[in-house]
Image 1 (spheres, one colour):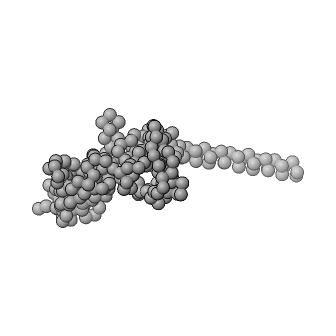
Image 2 (cartoon, helix red, strand yellow):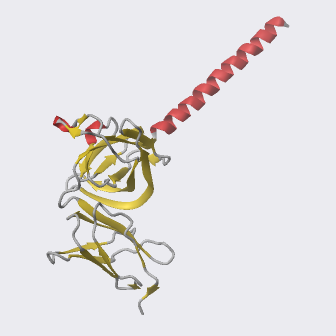
Image 3 (cartoon, helix red, strand yellow):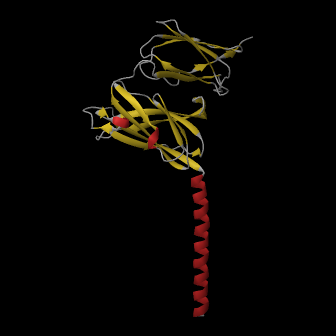
Length: 256
């Protein structure tokens, strides 16, 4: 009876080990197939060689907000095309002038995301693609474009003294119908009120558009039109002090 009991205990132990190994392997495969983002932020008294952060400034914001877009990226042309958006990421800044936040969203490995800092006034944003150990990262203005590797991906930004300079802000948004569905091929015209320079953007299949390399503090007239839709607010006046996101338009009816 004692031998049989010991044999049953041994069988139970072996079965438990096998089950743990199976579930552990499955969990490991699942972890490798998904990605997360951690956004890290440092405020610096000055910026050194190779964009190193020197010292803690006397004052700095209590938090910084980052926008997150999912899309495609052409490494040859440097063009990122947004397809959808993820919730903004708010990074709380501690007394040592830095902070870090891991997003709750989980992304398929290999996804391209664009994470852009809404730059606080009087500061200069410096994305740090070299801080990544997973996937690829590319810096563009106040944004990091990342091809997400498996597991956690660290996206690092530092801020030095100074404010946004000319031609370093953007305007992005989405055009949707009354049901919130993106409208493709909407035409947006942006006119610089000071110089008369005119730019045109066409929304992608999900309704997103973007204007980049705009001058800080300039007055712009933004118009929208579409062959099939009417817009109750078809014209806006904007004067970006920082990059503007979610400058959206809603179509209320179709043209007859």
